[in-house]
Length: 73
Image (cartoon, rainbow, N blue to C red; front, side, top):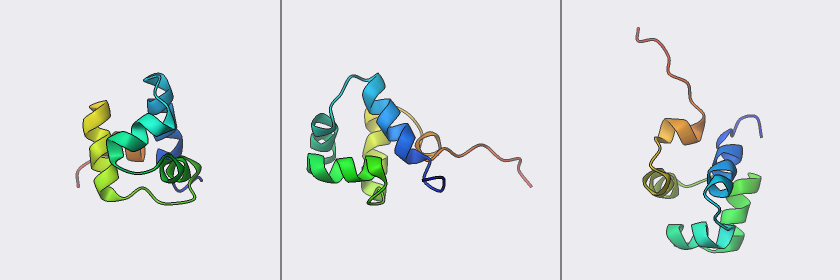
């Protein structure tokens, strides 16, 4: 789970928005079962779902991925 910080972030975003897994799954065009697997880390989040979540929550992909800005070299 350490290598996939987005697991906690997508769950937190969903809960902070008072949405159910089924509601977010509908936004993504997938099943609640599959979305639950993303939140548990059983399946990796596909890129097209990452982008849709960014649009839905109005956040960057870096935010969902838990990436910190690094200095330019």
